[in-house]
Length: 120
Image (cartoon, rainbow, N blue to C red; front, side, top):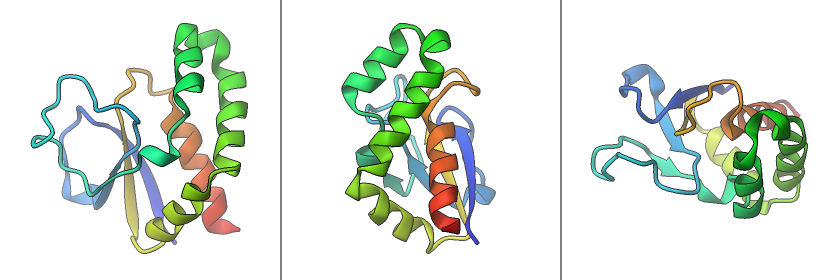
């Protein structure tokens, strides 16, 4: 079974991260492309630009609705099936995100969604 971990892109890379996947649609601010160690940039499984922009207008109040809508986007995305197939090939996958909030970010939702796909 694959273990999925979360980590901010600004944290140091560790061997235990194993397969590192950037799960932000936009390149993280303040990081040079050659400086970030990652194996895959999975833009197609990130929230749509409209959903992301709406969420960032008021993250605390929009969180529950954002989670619902993002899961809905993931459910209808053919890219998720392809991503799950890639994830299954690795014992440990670390999802990299840039959000400042460890409790209100799309990577948390994505992690839970992918874990359910792996079990089912």
